[in-house]
Image (tube, rainbow, N blue to C red; front, side, top):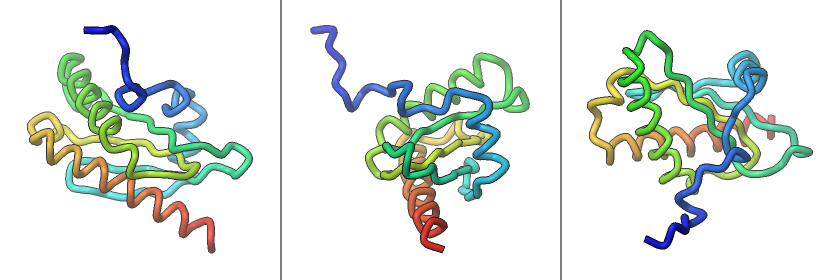
Length: 130
């Protein structure tokens, strides 16, 4: 092990939603897309704050104890990291997973996250055109 981590395996702060105000802005003024095992909230950012997509996760206490919630977050972060290349443009995305994410095979989770990212980017682009 060389201790070096490739850029693809990182999930830097610049690509994450971190502030409560950012989450609230996406929830209140953004749009939502329902998938089988999660809800995807998204909002296009202004051109001045261009860059790639920023992703946030919300896992409420209703989904279980701390161990289960942390496992859901770890699985979701890895799925987002593996499929974030499918989404481009300045868009903020928040994933709100359901408890079924715990038992979903990881390959299916990655497909669903990838589809959520792609749909969010496309619909955010269409909202900009209108």
